Amino acid sequence: MKHNNEESASAKVNRFCGGRAVDVGELWQRLRDEAGRISNKEPQMRALLEDVVLLRQNLGDALAARLSRKLAREDMKREELTPLLVGLFQDHPALVCSAAKDLIAIHERDAACDSPLQPLLFFKGFLAISTYRISHLLWQQERRDLALYFQSLASEVFAVDIHPAARIGCGILLDHATSFVVGETAIIEDDVSILHEVTLGGTGKVSGDRHPIVRSGVLIGAGAKILGRVEIGECAKIGAGSVVLTDVPAHVTVAGVPAVIVGMAKEEAPALDMNQCI
Image (cartoon, rainbow, N blue to C red; front, side, top):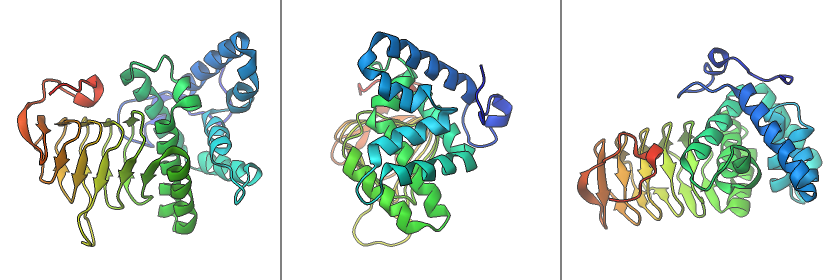
């Protein structure tokens, strides 16, 4: 069964964002089926599942409901927040497409994730990146005070601090996500996997483009710090706890403080395999 306002054809969906095809309507039906199963099994969760999924018409409305439950505060109550988010998701299908690709990426790469519904309900990495996407859109629309408000909320609620001006692609896995920090001019391409306590930061008071560029397929281990306008080449691997201060070529593994090349990445796409060994 299709639901109102859904993008169901892959060719139509893919005009909005890069990466592989995703059928948002098909994913939405999977989420509804799983929510119905859990609701029957765990009646104490029924109110949550109905509010976020079962009573919603499409994935955009579900995202708005989940984020509103998490982000509502005294200074912006849920009654104000929900219609704002619903309108943004309706007017900008790319936001929903990006979220769909993130959900699929998490399900495929995270061994602890049993279904794409789990990140929507429980994983703060997904909710944090979804909040960033809203703040980034608002930043592009010159609604910068509201964009910074959402950045502040994500930092407070999810312990993830991503500047609204940073540019982040689709198919992103923020695993655990706590203390993930991204600076204003950073760029993260599609299909990147990042563990907790990673910083993509600047150095000193340099203005202009001063934060890292992370190409597609990269895996960044827990606690890694990448500083300055350095480029992490496609399908490279950054070892946990490394401090990266210079460019990293494609398809290599670096580790250490400061990080140095310790070999070639064994995987064709480290972000997809999630192999932390170096």
